[in-house]
Image (cartoon, rainbow, N blue to C red; front, side):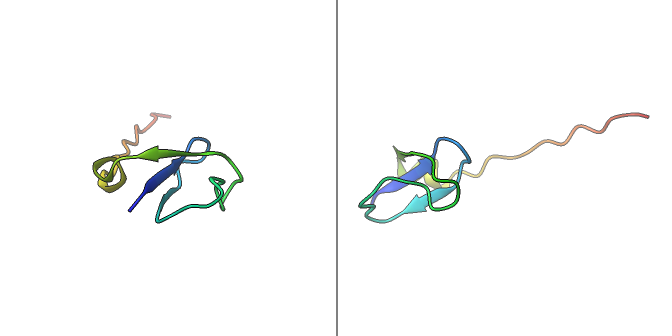
Length: 50
Protein backbone atom coordinates (compact mmCIF):
# COMPACT_ATOMS: atom_id res chain seq x y z
CA UNK A 1 0.00 0.00 0.00
CA UNK A 2 1.19 3.53 -0.69
CA UNK A 3 1.31 6.27 1.93
CA UNK A 4 1.21 10.01 1.35
CA UNK A 5 1.35 13.26 3.31
CA UNK A 6 0.27 16.70 2.15
CA UNK A 7 3.18 19.13 1.95
CA UNK A 8 0.91 22.05 2.89
CA UNK A 9 -1.45 20.91 5.67
CA UNK A 10 0.12 17.62 6.86
CA UNK A 11 -2.97 15.45 6.21
CA UNK A 12 -1.98 11.78 5.76
CA UNK A 13 -3.49 9.37 3.21
CA UNK A 14 -3.01 5.69 2.42
CA UNK A 15 -4.03 3.69 -0.63
CA UNK A 16 -3.52 3.95 -4.35
CA UNK A 17 -3.84 7.62 -5.27
CA UNK A 18 -4.63 8.43 -8.89
CA UNK A 19 -4.26 12.17 -8.66
CA UNK A 20 -1.82 13.18 -5.99
CA UNK A 21 -3.88 16.12 -4.69
CA UNK A 22 -4.89 16.64 -1.06
CA UNK A 23 -8.65 16.38 -0.63
CA UNK A 24 -8.51 18.66 2.41
CA UNK A 25 -6.60 21.71 1.10
CA UNK A 26 -5.79 20.98 -2.57
CA UNK A 27 -2.03 20.82 -1.95
CA UNK A 28 0.39 18.32 -3.49
CA UNK A 29 0.96 14.97 -1.76
CA UNK A 30 4.41 13.49 -1.11
CA UNK A 31 5.08 9.75 -0.83
CA UNK A 32 6.21 8.58 2.62
CA UNK A 33 7.11 5.25 4.22
CA UNK A 34 4.80 3.16 6.39
CA UNK A 35 6.88 4.08 9.44
CA UNK A 36 6.49 7.81 8.70
CA UNK A 37 2.74 7.29 8.21
CA UNK A 38 2.39 5.52 11.57
CA UNK A 39 4.54 8.05 13.40
CA UNK A 40 2.51 10.58 15.33
CA UNK A 41 4.28 13.81 16.06
CA UNK A 42 3.98 14.92 19.64
CA UNK A 43 2.91 18.53 19.93
CA UNK A 44 4.36 20.57 22.72
CA UNK A 45 2.35 23.51 23.97
CA UNK A 46 4.40 26.17 25.67
CA UNK A 47 2.39 28.21 28.13
CA UNK A 48 2.86 31.96 28.08
CA UNK A 49 3.00 33.83 31.35
CA UNK A 50 0.83 36.93 31.50
